[in-house]
Image (cartoon, rainbow, N blue to C red):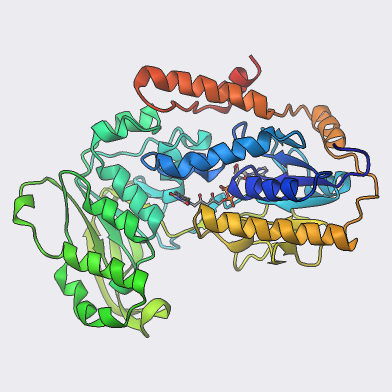
Length: 455
Ligand code: FAD
């Protein structure tokens, strides 16, 4: 087990990247110690706060992460914000290696006027709201309008559209927060338009998510056949996944007579970029979006959207921009590329900084599923192990690890939440859920989480 000269590795962020990096390191070396520092009192990052409540099977990775956290050479320190409570420099002093896996806590902005109007939200905030992210519990989105526009055509955009249109009876059996459930129960949103700047051959979502939209009960697809001109002809040259997705889209164009009576609709709209969010007469609330009408330059995945100079307004009372998450700089001592909003690295080794590594969304940028994050985290762990073997990282230099950091935290009045304390929060949430017939009812408040953890 751990001794004075065992390699001590610190991981910043307890999401998939952090846990997969830890898992790989612990498995590869029987002398290595891993400590995971997480800003929130609760672990698992976007598996808890991103993944849609109606995708419970995706959250099964939590079982593997829990096994890792319970490993005798792994410790979890929740409620510790790196960059605020402790600096990366301090961590580097206390550990042989530091792995940054703190994800992407910011979002890309549309960069148009009216973005701050009431009724305009980033997908990150909206998703955080229905998933119980403590900082978003006061979001209170107004769902009293008929039409919502979702900007962007990736899987997150489809998650948002699906949650807005899902039957309430179905949502109430998921781990969606009770306050979001109540709000959605009173929702008047009947129509969700999912708007992208490019064409049908460039949508960024996967077929599973489109199929889920098509299969929504009491909801029909409302596409504009004119936007699919020439698409059927292009099918034969497409790579297989893209081809199947496009065939499915083309199928939605055929109006199903039996569906005439349904009252809810969803649809893609193409070749539109927002140029302005339109305010109401008081200048307070969104009433629509002015789009530039685009044309495509080039074809396939690389095609670029160019404005034609024409515009079109689409009315809506709710606008959710789902155009990407963005990593933030958490500590000025860490190299950061503001252009890509990632930590510059080679296969997970942070450029020009010894002892510093990165994995997950902060390494690659905010795209890819959990499996992608797993692979890149294993790659980072592999590189770190190589540096230990080659002597680039020298484990014979004595490092105090968590011993040193916990003392620092104590003097700063920061009390970490251990993994067994998280398990108390977890049990509390599961118990609250049982009463409601849900897998769990999340605590929405950090203070409440801490009370349960330390009770
Ligand atoms: P994160 O999951 O964001 O984890 C980062 C962690 O670091 C967080 O816990 C955060 O609190 C912590 N942190 C941040 N700052 C600090 C700090 N200063 N100090 C300490 N800790 C910090 N993938 C799928 O496979 N299936 C899906 O259905 C799916 N749905 C998704 C839905 C949404 C809305 C989103 C956004 C993503 C979805 N994904 C899905 C993708 C998946 O969530 C990501 O691939 C994965 O979570 C990225 O892992 P990460 O560890 O890099 O980041």
